[in-house]
Length: 470
Image 1 (tube, rainbow, N blue to C red):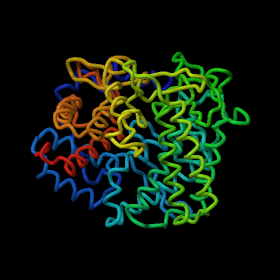
Image 2 (tube, rainbow, N blue to C red):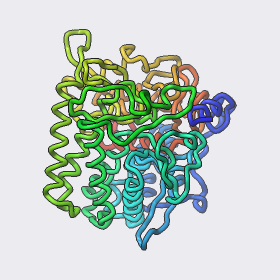
Image 3 (cartoon, rainbow, N blue to C red):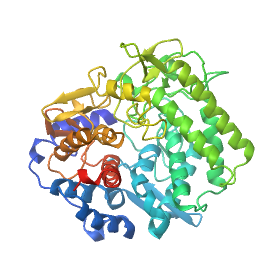
């Protein structure tokens, strides 16, 4: 049984993933103080402050349970070579995803400068991610024990080079971008250079080398992946290399941030994310002990990918304009859709890839939030974007949060908040996805990334548009 089958089965049974039986359950609330895995005085102070700022009782309760959920339930601290080590699981899966772990702690970054506990957490996670990248830069998820072989049932038989410490080995561009985003954000917020040691620098050199290799200019590279599974999105075509491409300077991705296989290997949102991340890495190189040549190489690759994006990533919008494709192959073939997982087309401004008022983004944004996108769903419970990972009719709350984070429209934000208020199905937490007509049918009751992003969304509104919360 693979991950998709596990979660679908839980949803159908009403176990772990939710179910109609839980529809009227009151909010669960936070674990007892003694049962919380990690605490931060600064986070607790924000919760107290926001109790006064959020007028709606349901939104207030959701914020109070979701915002600290990563700290409460997913952090395991330790030491490696006398330095902090933070292993942050996704929630219901006992593994650390480079993407998820970065996103889960992101809302706490603004507090880290003045909170020693958070500094230790970020130091430990930045170091853990660096060591993970050095185990295998092509892996997306890792085990706590770097000497153990995968315990994930759906990964055990994968036809790829599985190394000790690796939980799953799906090559996703964003897996290497998120640790850069986290490191850059931490340095900017705190000016603390402590986490950036020789191990981290070696990991960043590996990141640059891997992104270059996946341009595949000279050869197909070393990465191959195949899996025996019923869903075709669980494996890669053509002996594990993925579908063919014309080598145009874009970076190949085997899988999307949903962990689903790409149709066309040039995943446009992830290439945009790579441009941003490479520029961030170049900008912080001198401060973190990486030399000028490394910074130059980062910026040169970013410029090359950006040029290729403009040349190959835009398609007709069927109305005389241009929009960003979701995936292309360099031969002129393109796929238009969007997936709720980030990076997505909807999330491009959130990742600092472009401004929210960029004309092409505005047209693209309207298209992905419409029936032009085959994974845009609308029903009695609300509207939003899902994706192939869980299937048709299932809206991801993450898409509604991203809509809010990229919006200046009060009416649009209010409408999205209203859907989110009922999307929890009275559990008190955000889920991976819910049925377009019935929020009580949902997947993943414990999905920490969605909880963290909800907290981040509410704090963003408190900063930009406090009247919408009052």
